[in-house]
Amino acid sequence: MNAPFDRKRLGILLLAVLLPVLATLAASGSASPPALQAPGGPVVLEISGRIGVTNGDARARFDMTMLEGLGVTTTKTTTAWTSGQQVFDGIRMQTLLERVGAFGDRVEVVALNDYKVEIPASDFARWPVILAYRMNGEALRVRDKGPLWIVYPQDDFRALRTKEVQGKWVWQVKEIRVK
Image (cartoon, rainbow, N blue to C red):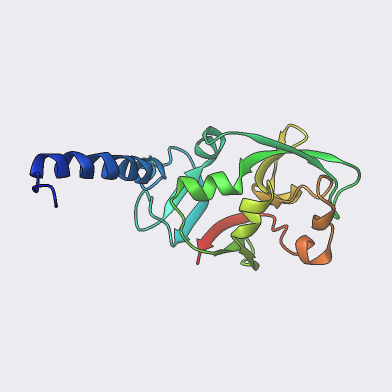
């Protein structure tokens, strides 16, 4: 014989099942990143394309202070263009893309001279690649591959010591387009 239908017990049962599911969804990062302030100094980087956080004209613009405020990651590595191991400071590319709510699977990095390289976004999740703004404690200048340089930690990961990866070390970065 079946028990009589009890709406109150059904409601409690549904809450017991649904509340943990809703809490998991809320904690999974479905909330968007906070708004992005406007740059107070000269813009050194623009990010456009498939991003959810902008500070005007469907773009995220950063001055150097804003980039430094996102956190500093230090990488010590050799490069094909310098002598010996160098110490680079910059923002992790994964952190930067998360900050602008990027949802693409690749990025096109554009240099001051309009040189372009397309990089899979998965590189930034897999490796601690940085967008460097200092080398050996000094701000990168245009003549030193600055003001921004994509740097792969090739000394820490043997798999990054290839010609293919070398082609992704874009210097004099001015723009990132998320695709």
